[in-house]
Length: 109
Image 1 (spheres, rainbow, N blue to C red):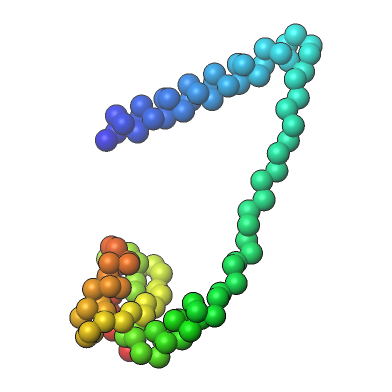
Image 2 (cartoon, rainbow, N blue to C red; image 1 turned 120 degrees about the vertical axis):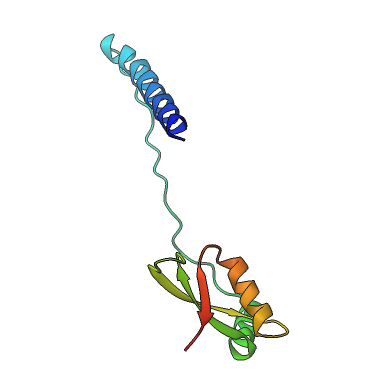
């Protein structure tokens, strides 16, 4: 595994040095080729929840089983809740466990 990491780092360094030498050649000749600057904006606006999605969420909150999820399983650094429906509590717990891999799932107190 160490060799794979070292090889990946070497390839990255080689790619960065190849790109820098390509850009340095026109600058040395005195003619600068300027590329247009493109700004990428992150879309932070959430999509509005449809009425159907809202009804499903409210129904699941009213009728579903709630579990406390701690990630990672050994030393929980973050806590959240998971609401799932099923024939019984064990089926609902299995759904939450499959949605949150490598996390501990316990009953809400």
